[in-house]
Image 1 (cartoon, rainbow, N blue to C red):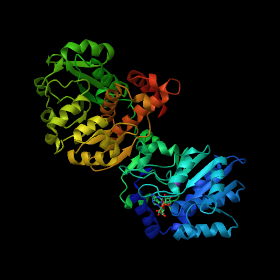
Image 2 (image 1 turned 120 degrees about the horizontal axis):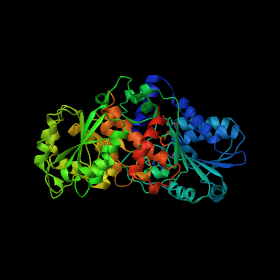
Image 3 (image 1 turned 180 degrees about the vertical axis):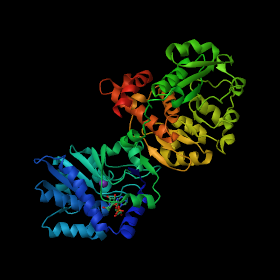
Image 4 (image 1 turned 45 degrees about the vertical axis):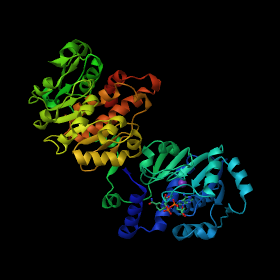
Length: 507
Ligand SMILES: NC(=O)C1=CN([C@@H]2O[C@H](COP(=O)(O)OP(=O)(O)OC[C@H]3O[C@@H](n4cnc5c(N)ncnc54)[C@H](O)[C@@H]3O)[C@@H](O)[C@H]2O)[C@H](O)CC1
Ligand SMILES: [K+]
């Protein structure tokens, strides 16, 4: 499933019409019919339905939906918001088909008082006023209507986008329909995965309107949602004759006297994700704490000062016997630590997280040319803000484009965490992760994910599959936990203990 901007969707529509030969009239018929089939499975025969129709093609979809609802015998009122002469092109074609099929409508401008009563007495409102063509703040009368719709008790079902909401990141908006559900046409728009926009969608589904994959590829769509099927298909299997070396030998570098738990979580998560062998390189004084909770790990005690490792302890590390390393969890920030040089000669997977990202930001230029092996960074928005010199607000507003810029500039795979984590490769491919819940917004979640990424990345032929699977399964484990427990009380340790079950559910 691709994720698009409004502009990309327009290009894809155009390609489908001009190069594939499916006319806009057919696409609109498909869109309206696909949306109708979903609406029909939601509404009941007793429902009273108001379809609100705008001037553009979103309104055109509305005429098809209204025609199908009326033909099926649902109690449906159709409200055309703009003056009739504003409805042109393909939307006009479907308005004419609606009229010639013998159906009637109301015009908002003629009967506002009746409109107000209809809005307050309808069980369902189908919002087909504005879609991807919206520009800027809502103009009259849409501003007033959106407010009225949002105050009504009706269940609001938006088509493609809640009216007023932009399709892509970093677009300002003041007002939009707050839908209970949104039926998105063909491909989710970026804002379905970005807050605060995402809240306006309510629950959402997609409706296939017949646009071929070729159109997405030809128009350069590069963002997708990671699907469960993709995760299942790329999960590594244990070979009958495998041994511990077959599943990766990883080094976790981190920990401090102040934060001994982080490296412990990373190490345990790596073990639960199937790594063959894991070693924790950490200040000597905390080895007992870590081995006490991650019995299966071996330790590499490092020199420390005031409870934190020092630069010399890192330069002495011999990475030659490891397939990959994760650096950062709980390592502290008191001493300057440079690790670009030790990793530049290492061709295994490197995952950088937490305090590792703090130190990375100090020597970013040294990473610009990439390394022999893949580098994965896992920033939360605050860490991404520091790496890019932006504010957290800027990062949250531009999650797709900033990740893409950074991944390309520093040749790293960026795992930008948050609700709907986005994974971006240096060549600009992007995946939005659909799993996870607010229970993960707690200390220790990131440390767990880092261990999972290291372990999963070492077990798949393409490390990227491992990264994407780790992100998906981390969220899935949390989703499974909240079936029986309260979101607020799940911990990173609970997530780690759930991993065997989450993995089993994907086999
Ligand atoms: N994805 C597909 O393949 C298909 C999508 N379809 C639907 O078409 C819309 C996009 O249609 P478009 O005509 O480009 O735009 P809209 O319908 O969203 O609206 C244009 C309309 O709105 C007026 N307008 C713009 N900004 C404002 C504002 N701030 N306040 C008030 N009015 C505004 C503008 O003047 C125009 O009149 C897409 O979302 C799908 O629903 C098709 O069905 C074909 C297949
Ligand atoms: K809409």
